[in-house]
Image (cartoon, one colour):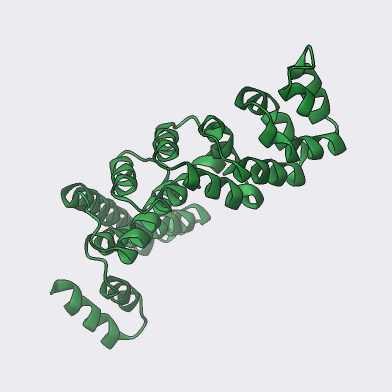
Length: 264
């Protein structure tokens, strides 16, 4: 790495890639990555990531020691693995607004691997500012991956709980809540329709119908949970959590109290 940085190796990419493919050399190279140019780091990152857990962790730690904005693409890629994620996040936070903008662009990129996109909302929410809220809210209505949506909602909920004064586009969030409530109602309608058919026609009770009922129940409950998370983002108090838990309670009195609170 020192020789490459000093320009003393004629074909640096070839030498670095050869080292990155050898387990012991890859680990040492990952530890020295902070001394390499962003172009050389980008060239060896796929090989280092493939070489295993320790190399991924050392690569993230090395880049986090002295973060450079030119390493932001590599740091975002390292979010896809649990072990190096902490170091990658800390480096991105140190890089500030430019890194936040790059994370926003990555969240808009549906072609990125799922294991990376899944951890973008939480990373963005760690920036805590108004721009971070805007990025997450802007993506909320367009995101089609339900797991990523849930991560966005958790990130926004945490930010608004910690700092309720953070500005938020209430109209946009409310529009998403109304659409999500409609999804929950549709799933409930079809679940009741299937239940009616099964109750009326004995031959309709099949493994497929049981799976369909479970699927529709899951869609109904999942959408309803997202509605309450959206309401919590709009009004960040503990009341919506209490109401949601009460509605799911087996106790009729608790359910009734929660309905009354919700109507208020």
